[in-house]
Image (cartoon, rainbow, N blue to C red):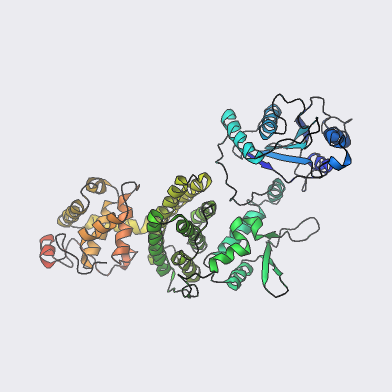
Length: 572
Protein backbone atom coordinates (compact mmCIF):
# COMPACT_ATOMS: atom_id res chain seq x y z
CA UNK A 1 0.00 0.00 0.00
CA UNK A 2 1.52 3.27 -1.13
CA UNK A 3 0.48 6.62 0.41
CA UNK A 4 1.53 9.80 -1.36
CA UNK A 5 1.17 13.34 -0.06
CA UNK A 6 0.75 15.75 -2.95
CA UNK A 7 1.68 19.41 -3.14
CA UNK A 8 -0.56 21.68 -1.13
CA UNK A 9 -3.06 23.72 -3.08
CA UNK A 10 -5.05 26.92 -2.73
CA UNK A 11 -8.38 25.95 -4.36
CA UNK A 12 -10.51 23.26 -2.76
CA UNK A 13 -13.09 23.38 -5.53
CA UNK A 14 -10.48 22.61 -8.19
CA UNK A 15 -9.36 19.40 -6.49
CA UNK A 16 -12.98 18.35 -5.86
CA UNK A 17 -13.79 18.78 -9.54
CA UNK A 18 -10.80 16.63 -10.48
CA UNK A 19 -11.64 13.85 -7.99
CA UNK A 20 -15.27 13.63 -9.10
CA UNK A 21 -14.59 14.36 -12.75
CA UNK A 22 -13.70 11.93 -15.56
CA UNK A 23 -9.94 12.30 -15.01
CA UNK A 24 -7.35 13.45 -17.50
CA UNK A 25 -8.06 10.51 -19.83
CA UNK A 26 -11.48 9.21 -18.75
CA UNK A 27 -9.87 6.93 -16.18
CA UNK A 28 -12.15 7.91 -13.25
CA UNK A 29 -15.24 5.72 -12.80
CA UNK A 30 -18.06 5.87 -10.24
CA UNK A 31 -16.49 8.61 -8.13
CA UNK A 32 -18.07 8.66 -4.68
CA UNK A 33 -17.42 9.42 -1.03
CA UNK A 34 -16.33 6.52 1.20
CA UNK A 35 -15.72 8.50 4.41
CA UNK A 36 -15.57 12.05 5.74
CA UNK A 37 -15.19 14.04 8.95
CA UNK A 38 -19.01 14.13 9.24
CA UNK A 39 -21.27 11.21 8.25
CA UNK A 40 -23.74 13.73 6.78
CA UNK A 41 -21.20 15.18 4.35
CA UNK A 42 -22.83 15.63 0.91
CA UNK A 43 -21.59 13.26 -1.82
CA UNK A 44 -21.83 14.77 -5.32
CA UNK A 45 -21.02 11.35 -6.77
CA UNK A 46 -23.99 9.39 -5.44
CA UNK A 47 -26.46 12.13 -4.36
CA UNK A 48 -27.97 13.97 -7.36
CA UNK A 49 -28.97 16.86 -5.07
CA UNK A 50 -25.42 17.43 -3.77
CA UNK A 51 -23.05 19.79 -5.58
CA UNK A 52 -19.32 20.34 -5.69
CA UNK A 53 -19.88 23.79 -4.23
CA UNK A 54 -21.68 22.39 -1.18
CA UNK A 55 -18.81 20.04 -0.41
CA UNK A 56 -16.27 22.81 -0.95
CA UNK A 57 -18.05 25.27 1.35
CA UNK A 58 -18.39 22.65 4.07
CA UNK A 59 -14.69 21.76 3.97
CA UNK A 60 -13.55 25.40 3.74
CA UNK A 61 -15.79 26.73 6.51
CA UNK A 62 -13.00 26.92 9.15
CA UNK A 63 -10.74 28.69 6.61
CA UNK A 64 -13.41 31.20 5.63
CA UNK A 65 -14.12 31.91 9.31
CA UNK A 66 -10.62 33.33 9.82
CA UNK A 67 -9.85 37.01 9.20
CA UNK A 68 -8.49 37.56 5.73
CA UNK A 69 -4.94 38.19 6.98
CA UNK A 70 -4.80 34.88 8.85
CA UNK A 71 -6.03 32.56 6.12
CA UNK A 72 -3.25 30.33 4.77
CA UNK A 73 -2.77 30.62 1.03
CA UNK A 74 -1.98 26.91 0.58
CA UNK A 75 -4.71 25.39 2.70
CA UNK A 76 -5.67 22.30 0.62
CA UNK A 77 -4.09 19.03 1.78
CA UNK A 78 -4.19 16.02 -0.55
CA UNK A 79 -3.21 12.40 0.15
CA UNK A 80 -3.67 9.45 -2.21
CA UNK A 81 -3.48 5.87 -0.95
CA UNK A 82 -2.96 3.11 -3.52
CA UNK A 83 -3.06 -0.66 -3.12
CA UNK A 84 -0.45 -2.84 -4.82
CA UNK A 85 -1.51 -4.45 -8.15
CA UNK A 86 -1.54 -7.95 -6.63
CA UNK A 87 -3.74 -6.95 -3.67
CA UNK A 88 -7.43 -7.96 -3.63
CA UNK A 89 -10.04 -5.29 -4.37
CA UNK A 90 -11.04 -3.70 -1.07
CA UNK A 91 -14.60 -2.73 -0.20
CA UNK A 92 -15.78 0.83 0.45
CA UNK A 93 -15.94 0.00 4.16
CA UNK A 94 -12.30 -1.13 4.07
CA UNK A 95 -11.22 2.05 2.33
CA UNK A 96 -13.25 4.14 4.79
CA UNK A 97 -11.41 2.53 7.69
CA UNK A 98 -8.05 3.07 5.96
CA UNK A 99 -8.92 6.74 5.34
CA UNK A 100 -9.71 7.29 9.03
CA UNK A 101 -6.46 5.64 10.03
CA UNK A 102 -4.50 7.84 7.64
CA UNK A 103 -5.97 11.16 8.77
CA UNK A 104 -5.41 10.12 12.39
CA UNK A 105 -1.81 9.03 11.81
CA UNK A 106 -0.80 12.13 9.85
CA UNK A 107 -2.30 14.62 12.33
CA UNK A 108 -5.15 15.83 10.12
CA UNK A 109 -7.80 14.35 12.41
CA UNK A 110 -6.32 12.60 15.48
CA UNK A 111 -8.59 10.10 17.22
CA UNK A 112 -10.88 11.78 19.75
CA UNK A 113 -10.12 15.32 18.54
CA UNK A 114 -13.49 17.04 17.99
CA UNK A 115 -11.90 20.20 16.64
CA UNK A 116 -9.71 18.52 14.02
CA UNK A 117 -9.43 19.46 10.35
CA UNK A 118 -12.29 18.69 8.00
CA UNK A 119 -11.64 16.01 5.41
CA UNK A 120 -13.29 13.75 2.84
CA UNK A 121 -12.15 10.53 1.12
CA UNK A 122 -13.16 9.97 -2.52
CA UNK A 123 -12.88 6.70 -4.43
CA UNK A 124 -12.95 6.75 -8.22
CA UNK A 125 -11.08 3.49 -8.97
CA UNK A 126 -10.83 0.01 -7.51
CA UNK A 127 -7.26 0.33 -6.28
CA UNK A 128 -7.00 3.72 -4.54
CA UNK A 129 -8.65 6.62 -2.72
CA UNK A 130 -7.92 10.34 -2.43
CA UNK A 131 -8.25 12.25 0.82
CA UNK A 132 -8.82 16.00 0.68
CA UNK A 133 -8.58 18.15 3.81
CA UNK A 134 -8.41 21.84 4.70
CA UNK A 135 -5.47 22.89 6.86
CA UNK A 136 -7.38 24.92 9.44
CA UNK A 137 -8.94 23.15 12.39
CA UNK A 138 -12.47 23.88 13.63
CA UNK A 139 -10.92 25.84 16.52
CA UNK A 140 -9.02 28.06 14.05
CA UNK A 141 -5.59 26.59 14.75
CA UNK A 142 -3.28 24.85 12.29
CA UNK A 143 -2.79 21.08 12.50
CA UNK A 144 0.52 19.61 13.60
CA UNK A 145 1.78 17.80 10.51
CA UNK A 146 5.45 17.27 11.34
CA UNK A 147 6.77 14.24 9.36
CA UNK A 148 3.29 13.43 8.06
CA UNK A 149 4.73 11.58 5.05
CA UNK A 150 6.77 9.29 7.26
CA UNK A 151 3.81 8.70 9.55
CA UNK A 152 1.61 7.88 6.56
CA UNK A 153 4.17 5.31 5.42
CA UNK A 154 4.31 3.75 8.89
CA UNK A 155 0.52 3.51 9.03
CA UNK A 156 0.49 1.93 5.54
CA UNK A 157 2.80 -0.81 6.82
CA UNK A 158 0.39 -1.46 9.69
CA UNK A 159 -2.59 -1.54 7.28
CA UNK A 160 -0.79 -4.10 5.12
CA UNK A 161 -0.29 -6.36 8.12
CA UNK A 162 -3.87 -5.98 9.35
CA UNK A 163 -5.47 -6.66 5.95
CA UNK A 164 -3.01 -9.30 4.72
CA UNK A 165 -1.85 -7.12 1.82
CA UNK A 166 1.49 -7.15 0.06
CA UNK A 167 4.19 -5.81 2.38
CA UNK A 168 5.83 -2.88 0.63
CA UNK A 169 9.40 -2.16 1.68
CA UNK A 170 9.89 1.37 3.07
CA UNK A 171 11.19 3.96 0.63
CA UNK A 172 14.05 6.39 1.13
CA UNK A 173 13.31 9.05 -1.48
CA UNK A 174 15.75 7.73 -4.10
CA UNK A 175 13.27 5.75 -6.20
CA UNK A 176 12.19 6.77 -9.67
CA UNK A 177 8.86 8.55 -9.86
CA UNK A 178 5.96 6.13 -10.25
CA UNK A 179 3.66 6.58 -13.24
CA UNK A 180 0.42 8.33 -12.41
CA UNK A 181 -2.93 6.59 -12.69
CA UNK A 182 -3.66 8.71 -15.77
CA UNK A 183 -0.46 7.45 -17.42
CA UNK A 184 -1.29 3.84 -16.60
CA UNK A 185 -4.85 4.10 -17.91
CA UNK A 186 -3.63 5.79 -21.05
CA UNK A 187 -1.16 2.94 -21.67
CA UNK A 188 -3.92 0.37 -21.09
CA UNK A 189 -6.24 2.06 -23.56
CA UNK A 190 -3.53 2.01 -26.19
CA UNK A 191 -2.64 -1.62 -25.55
CA UNK A 192 0.84 -0.85 -24.21
CA UNK A 193 2.31 -2.99 -21.46
CA UNK A 194 4.34 -0.10 -20.05
CA UNK A 195 3.79 3.61 -19.64
CA UNK A 196 5.75 6.12 -21.76
CA UNK A 197 7.57 7.20 -18.59
CA UNK A 198 8.85 3.64 -18.03
CA UNK A 199 9.86 3.23 -21.69
CA UNK A 200 11.69 6.55 -21.70
CA UNK A 201 13.47 5.74 -18.43
CA UNK A 202 14.82 2.53 -19.93
CA UNK A 203 15.83 4.21 -23.20
CA UNK A 204 17.69 7.01 -21.42
CA UNK A 205 19.44 4.55 -19.10
CA UNK A 206 20.66 2.51 -22.03
CA UNK A 207 21.80 5.61 -23.89
CA UNK A 208 23.86 6.69 -20.89
CA UNK A 209 25.38 3.24 -20.31
CA UNK A 210 29.07 3.48 -21.13
CA UNK A 211 28.70 6.82 -22.98
CA UNK A 212 31.98 8.74 -22.97
CA UNK A 213 30.59 12.27 -23.21
CA UNK A 214 27.52 14.44 -23.64
CA UNK A 215 27.41 14.36 -27.43
CA UNK A 216 27.59 10.58 -27.53
CA UNK A 217 24.75 10.44 -25.00
CA UNK A 218 22.49 12.69 -27.09
CA UNK A 219 23.45 10.86 -30.29
CA UNK A 220 22.34 7.60 -28.68
CA UNK A 221 19.04 9.16 -27.58
CA UNK A 222 18.40 10.24 -31.17
CA UNK A 223 19.37 6.79 -32.49
CA UNK A 224 16.84 5.26 -30.09
CA UNK A 225 14.14 7.23 -31.92
CA UNK A 226 13.32 9.63 -29.09
CA UNK A 227 12.25 13.24 -29.54
CA UNK A 228 14.76 15.48 -27.74
CA UNK A 229 14.64 19.05 -26.55
CA UNK A 230 17.71 20.71 -25.07
CA UNK A 231 17.53 23.70 -22.77
CA UNK A 232 20.32 25.98 -23.97
CA UNK A 233 21.96 28.79 -22.00
CA UNK A 234 22.91 32.12 -23.66
CA UNK A 235 26.49 30.82 -23.65
CA UNK A 236 25.43 27.89 -25.80
CA UNK A 237 25.87 25.32 -23.05
CA UNK A 238 23.18 22.69 -22.51
CA UNK A 239 21.42 23.21 -19.17
CA UNK A 240 19.03 20.27 -19.35
CA UNK A 241 16.99 18.08 -21.63
CA UNK A 242 13.56 16.56 -22.10
CA UNK A 243 12.58 13.50 -24.13
CA UNK A 244 9.35 12.12 -25.57
CA UNK A 245 8.15 9.06 -27.46
CA UNK A 246 7.06 9.99 -31.00
CA UNK A 247 3.64 8.38 -30.56
CA UNK A 248 2.86 9.72 -27.08
CA UNK A 249 0.78 12.89 -27.48
CA UNK A 250 -1.57 14.92 -25.33
CA UNK A 251 -5.11 16.05 -26.11
CA UNK A 252 -3.72 18.88 -28.29
CA UNK A 253 -1.72 16.42 -30.37
CA UNK A 254 1.58 17.60 -28.90
CA UNK A 255 4.38 15.22 -27.78
CA UNK A 256 4.48 14.61 -24.01
CA UNK A 257 7.99 15.49 -22.87
CA UNK A 258 9.65 14.36 -19.62
CA UNK A 259 12.80 15.80 -18.11
CA UNK A 260 15.50 13.37 -17.05
CA UNK A 261 14.93 14.14 -13.38
CA UNK A 262 11.24 13.20 -13.78
CA UNK A 263 12.29 9.80 -15.09
CA UNK A 264 14.74 8.98 -12.28
CA UNK A 265 16.86 10.98 -9.82
CA UNK A 266 20.13 9.96 -11.50
CA UNK A 267 19.00 10.75 -15.06
CA UNK A 268 19.08 14.54 -14.79
CA UNK A 269 21.80 16.03 -16.98
CA UNK A 270 23.97 17.18 -14.01
CA UNK A 271 23.85 13.68 -12.49
CA UNK A 272 24.66 12.01 -15.82
CA UNK A 273 27.55 14.44 -16.31
CA UNK A 274 29.07 13.18 -13.07
CA UNK A 275 29.81 9.94 -14.91
CA UNK A 276 32.01 11.83 -17.35
CA UNK A 277 33.74 14.12 -14.85
CA UNK A 278 37.38 12.99 -14.70
CA UNK A 279 39.12 12.67 -11.33
CA UNK A 280 42.79 12.60 -10.41
CA UNK A 281 42.61 8.80 -10.63
CA UNK A 282 41.27 8.53 -14.14
CA UNK A 283 41.88 11.80 -16.02
CA UNK A 284 43.70 10.00 -18.81
CA UNK A 285 41.46 6.97 -18.76
CA UNK A 286 38.13 8.70 -19.32
CA UNK A 287 38.96 9.47 -22.94
CA UNK A 288 40.03 5.89 -23.74
CA UNK A 289 38.32 4.58 -26.88
CA UNK A 290 36.48 1.30 -26.75
CA UNK A 291 38.94 -1.59 -27.01
CA UNK A 292 36.69 -4.14 -28.67
CA UNK A 293 37.51 -6.99 -31.03
CA UNK A 294 34.12 -8.68 -30.79
CA UNK A 295 31.27 -9.52 -28.44
CA UNK A 296 33.13 -12.43 -26.81
CA UNK A 297 36.20 -10.32 -26.03
CA UNK A 298 34.03 -7.56 -24.58
CA UNK A 299 32.26 -10.06 -22.34
CA UNK A 300 35.52 -11.47 -21.04
CA UNK A 301 36.66 -7.95 -20.13
CA UNK A 302 33.37 -7.42 -18.31
CA UNK A 303 34.04 -10.63 -16.38
CA UNK A 304 37.42 -9.33 -15.26
CA UNK A 305 36.03 -5.91 -14.32
CA UNK A 306 33.14 -7.51 -12.40
CA UNK A 307 35.59 -9.68 -10.46
CA UNK A 308 37.60 -6.58 -9.47
CA UNK A 309 34.39 -4.83 -8.44
CA UNK A 310 33.38 -7.85 -6.37
CA UNK A 311 36.56 -7.55 -4.33
CA UNK A 312 35.81 -3.84 -3.78
CA UNK A 313 32.33 -4.69 -2.46
CA UNK A 314 33.96 -7.08 -0.01
CA UNK A 315 36.48 -4.62 1.41
CA UNK A 316 35.96 -1.10 -0.01
CA UNK A 317 34.65 2.13 1.49
CA UNK A 318 30.93 2.84 1.20
CA UNK A 319 31.30 5.67 -1.34
CA UNK A 320 33.49 3.52 -3.57
CA UNK A 321 31.09 0.58 -3.26
CA UNK A 322 28.19 2.85 -4.25
CA UNK A 323 30.14 3.87 -7.36
CA UNK A 324 30.75 0.23 -8.29
CA UNK A 325 27.06 -0.61 -7.83
CA UNK A 326 26.00 2.32 -10.01
CA UNK A 327 28.42 1.23 -12.74
CA UNK A 328 27.11 -2.34 -12.46
CA UNK A 329 23.74 -0.94 -13.52
CA UNK A 330 25.40 0.48 -16.64
CA UNK A 331 26.95 -2.90 -17.41
CA UNK A 332 23.58 -4.63 -17.12
CA UNK A 333 21.97 -2.04 -19.41
CA UNK A 334 24.74 -2.52 -21.97
CA UNK A 335 24.59 -6.30 -21.72
CA UNK A 336 20.82 -6.32 -22.14
CA UNK A 337 20.89 -4.28 -25.32
CA UNK A 338 23.62 -6.41 -26.92
CA UNK A 339 22.42 -9.83 -25.77
CA UNK A 340 21.32 -12.76 -27.91
CA UNK A 341 17.62 -13.43 -28.36
CA UNK A 342 17.40 -16.40 -25.98
CA UNK A 343 18.79 -14.39 -23.03
CA UNK A 344 17.51 -10.92 -23.91
CA UNK A 345 14.21 -10.97 -22.02
CA UNK A 346 15.74 -12.06 -18.70
CA UNK A 347 18.70 -9.70 -19.04
CA UNK A 348 16.41 -6.77 -19.79
CA UNK A 349 14.32 -7.69 -16.74
CA UNK A 350 17.49 -7.91 -14.63
CA UNK A 351 18.63 -4.46 -15.78
CA UNK A 352 15.19 -2.97 -15.10
CA UNK A 353 15.06 -4.49 -11.61
CA UNK A 354 18.61 -3.46 -10.72
CA UNK A 355 17.90 0.15 -11.68
CA UNK A 356 16.35 0.61 -8.23
CA UNK A 357 19.38 -0.97 -6.55
CA UNK A 358 21.83 1.38 -8.29
CA UNK A 359 20.77 4.43 -6.21
CA UNK A 360 20.89 5.10 -2.49
CA UNK A 361 21.70 7.96 -0.14
CA UNK A 362 25.34 6.85 -0.08
CA UNK A 363 27.02 9.28 -2.45
CA UNK A 364 29.07 7.49 -5.10
CA UNK A 365 32.76 8.39 -5.34
CA UNK A 366 33.01 8.79 -9.09
CA UNK A 367 36.27 7.86 -10.78
CA UNK A 368 36.64 4.58 -8.91
CA UNK A 369 34.37 2.69 -11.30
CA UNK A 370 36.27 3.27 -14.53
CA UNK A 371 36.84 -0.42 -15.26
CA UNK A 372 33.13 -1.27 -15.16
CA UNK A 373 32.13 1.82 -17.15
CA UNK A 374 34.78 1.04 -19.78
CA UNK A 375 33.49 -2.54 -19.88
CA UNK A 376 29.95 -1.25 -20.48
CA UNK A 377 31.29 0.95 -23.26
CA UNK A 378 33.07 -2.02 -24.83
CA UNK A 379 29.84 -4.03 -24.75
CA UNK A 380 27.88 -1.32 -26.55
CA UNK A 381 30.53 -0.89 -29.22
CA UNK A 382 31.08 -4.64 -29.67
CA UNK A 383 27.61 -4.98 -31.16
CA UNK A 384 24.99 -7.71 -30.72
CA UNK A 385 26.27 -11.11 -29.64
CA UNK A 386 25.40 -14.42 -31.23
CA UNK A 387 23.78 -16.97 -28.98
CA UNK A 388 26.25 -19.69 -29.90
CA UNK A 389 29.96 -20.40 -30.08
CA UNK A 390 32.40 -18.24 -28.17
CA UNK A 391 29.89 -15.37 -27.92
CA UNK A 392 27.30 -17.57 -26.25
CA UNK A 393 29.75 -19.24 -23.88
CA UNK A 394 31.33 -15.91 -22.93
CA UNK A 395 27.83 -14.65 -22.15
CA UNK A 396 27.39 -17.52 -19.70
CA UNK A 397 30.73 -16.66 -18.13
CA UNK A 398 29.90 -12.99 -17.62
CA UNK A 399 26.35 -13.66 -16.38
CA UNK A 400 27.73 -16.09 -13.81
CA UNK A 401 30.14 -13.42 -12.51
CA UNK A 402 27.50 -10.67 -12.54
CA UNK A 403 25.21 -12.91 -10.50
CA UNK A 404 27.81 -12.96 -7.72
CA UNK A 405 28.43 -9.22 -8.02
CA UNK A 406 24.74 -8.36 -7.77
CA UNK A 407 24.23 -10.77 -4.89
CA UNK A 408 27.08 -9.02 -3.07
CA UNK A 409 25.39 -5.68 -3.79
CA UNK A 410 22.17 -7.03 -2.27
CA UNK A 411 24.05 -8.05 0.88
CA UNK A 412 25.68 -4.61 1.15
CA UNK A 413 22.33 -2.84 0.76
CA UNK A 414 20.76 -5.13 3.35
CA UNK A 415 23.59 -4.38 5.77
CA UNK A 416 22.96 -0.67 5.26
CA UNK A 417 19.20 -1.23 5.75
CA UNK A 418 18.45 -0.14 2.19
CA UNK A 419 15.36 -2.36 2.00
CA UNK A 420 14.09 -1.44 -1.45
CA UNK A 421 17.54 -1.61 -3.02
CA UNK A 422 18.29 -5.00 -1.47
CA UNK A 423 14.97 -6.38 -2.69
CA UNK A 424 15.60 -5.00 -6.20
CA UNK A 425 19.07 -6.56 -6.33
CA UNK A 426 17.66 -9.93 -5.31
CA UNK A 427 15.04 -9.67 -8.09
CA UNK A 428 17.77 -8.84 -10.59
CA UNK A 429 19.80 -11.85 -9.42
CA UNK A 430 16.85 -14.16 -10.05
CA UNK A 431 16.53 -12.89 -13.60
CA UNK A 432 20.28 -13.38 -14.08
CA UNK A 433 19.95 -16.94 -12.80
CA UNK A 434 17.36 -17.63 -15.52
CA UNK A 435 19.51 -15.92 -18.17
CA UNK A 436 22.51 -18.00 -17.11
CA UNK A 437 20.60 -21.26 -17.50
CA UNK A 438 19.71 -20.29 -21.06
CA UNK A 439 23.23 -19.10 -21.95
CA UNK A 440 25.11 -21.98 -20.30
CA UNK A 441 22.97 -24.85 -21.56
CA UNK A 442 24.98 -25.56 -24.73
CA UNK A 443 28.59 -25.02 -23.53
CA UNK A 444 27.98 -26.88 -20.27
CA UNK A 445 26.43 -29.78 -22.18
CA UNK A 446 29.59 -30.03 -24.31
CA UNK A 447 31.75 -29.99 -21.21
CA UNK A 448 29.58 -32.67 -19.58
CA UNK A 449 30.03 -34.91 -22.61
CA UNK A 450 33.77 -34.33 -22.69
CA UNK A 451 34.20 -34.99 -18.99
CA UNK A 452 32.11 -38.14 -19.17
CA UNK A 453 34.35 -39.47 -21.99
CA UNK A 454 37.54 -39.13 -19.95
CA UNK A 455 39.20 -42.40 -19.08
CA UNK A 456 38.49 -43.59 -15.53
CA UNK A 457 42.14 -43.09 -14.60
CA UNK A 458 41.93 -39.40 -15.55
CA UNK A 459 38.60 -39.00 -13.77
CA UNK A 460 40.22 -40.36 -10.60
CA UNK A 461 43.20 -38.10 -11.21
CA UNK A 462 41.02 -34.95 -11.28
CA UNK A 463 39.01 -36.13 -8.27
CA UNK A 464 42.29 -36.46 -6.37
CA UNK A 465 43.23 -32.90 -7.37
CA UNK A 466 39.92 -31.58 -6.06
CA UNK A 467 40.30 -33.47 -2.78
CA UNK A 468 43.79 -32.06 -2.37
CA UNK A 469 42.79 -28.46 -3.13
CA UNK A 470 39.32 -28.36 -1.57
CA UNK A 471 39.08 -31.16 0.99
CA UNK A 472 36.00 -29.76 2.75
CA UNK A 473 34.02 -29.30 -0.48
CA UNK A 474 35.29 -32.20 -2.55
CA UNK A 475 32.52 -34.72 -1.77
CA UNK A 476 29.82 -32.18 -2.58
CA UNK A 477 31.54 -31.15 -5.82
CA UNK A 478 31.98 -34.73 -7.02
CA UNK A 479 28.31 -35.45 -6.29
CA UNK A 480 27.02 -32.42 -8.22
CA UNK A 481 25.53 -32.78 -11.74
CA UNK A 482 28.20 -30.38 -12.99
CA UNK A 483 31.12 -32.56 -11.90
CA UNK A 484 31.76 -33.87 -15.44
CA UNK A 485 32.01 -30.30 -16.77
CA UNK A 486 34.44 -29.39 -14.02
CA UNK A 487 36.60 -32.44 -14.82
CA UNK A 488 36.69 -31.43 -18.49
CA UNK A 489 37.79 -27.92 -17.54
CA UNK A 490 40.50 -29.23 -15.21
CA UNK A 491 41.67 -31.48 -18.04
CA UNK A 492 41.91 -28.54 -20.47
CA UNK A 493 43.75 -26.44 -17.91
CA UNK A 494 46.26 -29.20 -17.26
CA UNK A 495 46.81 -29.72 -20.99
CA UNK A 496 47.48 -25.99 -21.28
CA UNK A 497 50.26 -26.29 -18.70
CA UNK A 498 48.45 -25.27 -15.52
CA UNK A 499 48.49 -27.03 -12.21
CA UNK A 500 44.87 -27.94 -11.39
CA UNK A 501 45.50 -27.93 -7.64
CA UNK A 502 46.97 -24.45 -7.79
CA UNK A 503 44.11 -23.14 -9.94
CA UNK A 504 41.46 -24.67 -7.70
CA UNK A 505 43.10 -23.29 -4.58
CA UNK A 506 43.31 -19.82 -6.07
CA UNK A 507 39.73 -19.92 -7.36
CA UNK A 508 38.34 -20.94 -3.96
CA UNK A 509 40.52 -18.53 -1.99
CA UNK A 510 39.32 -15.46 -3.86
CA UNK A 511 35.75 -15.87 -2.73
CA UNK A 512 33.70 -18.45 -0.83
CA UNK A 513 31.93 -21.17 -2.76
CA UNK A 514 29.73 -23.09 -0.36
CA UNK A 515 26.76 -20.71 -0.70
CA UNK A 516 26.64 -21.18 -4.47
CA UNK A 517 23.74 -23.22 -5.80
CA UNK A 518 26.07 -25.06 -8.19
CA UNK A 519 29.71 -24.89 -7.10
CA UNK A 520 30.85 -26.86 -10.15
CA UNK A 521 29.44 -24.28 -12.57
CA UNK A 522 31.03 -21.44 -10.63
CA UNK A 523 34.42 -23.15 -10.66
CA UNK A 524 34.15 -23.98 -14.37
CA UNK A 525 33.88 -20.31 -15.32
CA UNK A 526 36.41 -19.10 -12.76
CA UNK A 527 38.97 -21.65 -13.94
CA UNK A 528 38.37 -20.94 -17.61
CA UNK A 529 38.88 -17.23 -16.97
CA UNK A 530 41.95 -17.70 -14.75
CA UNK A 531 43.57 -20.22 -17.13
CA UNK A 532 42.67 -18.13 -20.18
CA UNK A 533 40.80 -21.03 -21.72
CA UNK A 534 38.23 -20.40 -24.47
CA UNK A 535 34.77 -19.90 -23.05
CA UNK A 536 33.39 -22.25 -25.73
CA UNK A 537 34.77 -25.79 -25.24
CA UNK A 538 34.69 -26.36 -29.01
CA UNK A 539 37.39 -23.72 -29.38
CA UNK A 540 39.81 -25.58 -27.10
CA UNK A 541 43.02 -26.36 -28.97
CA UNK A 542 44.10 -29.16 -26.65
CA UNK A 543 41.63 -31.95 -25.92
CA UNK A 544 42.27 -35.29 -24.26
CA UNK A 545 40.39 -38.24 -25.74
CA UNK A 546 40.22 -41.16 -23.34
CA UNK A 547 43.34 -39.88 -21.68
CA UNK A 548 45.51 -40.22 -24.81
CA UNK A 549 46.54 -36.63 -25.57
CA UNK A 550 49.13 -34.37 -23.99
CA UNK A 551 50.43 -37.04 -21.57
CA UNK A 552 49.84 -40.76 -21.54
CA UNK A 553 48.75 -41.21 -17.92
CA UNK A 554 48.26 -39.42 -14.60
CA UNK A 555 51.53 -40.83 -13.35
CA UNK A 556 53.29 -39.48 -16.42
CA UNK A 557 51.63 -36.10 -15.74
CA UNK A 558 53.20 -36.12 -12.27
CA UNK A 559 56.62 -36.84 -13.75
CA UNK A 560 56.41 -34.14 -16.40
CA UNK A 561 55.51 -31.45 -13.89
CA UNK A 562 51.92 -30.72 -14.80
CA UNK A 563 50.17 -33.10 -12.43
CA UNK A 564 48.56 -32.19 -9.13
CA UNK A 565 51.80 -32.50 -7.20
CA UNK A 566 53.61 -29.86 -9.24
CA UNK A 567 53.54 -26.11 -9.52
CA UNK A 568 52.23 -24.76 -12.82
CA UNK A 569 54.84 -23.10 -15.04
CA UNK A 570 52.08 -20.80 -16.35
CA UNK A 571 50.58 -19.60 -13.11
CA UNK A 572 48.29 -16.62 -13.62
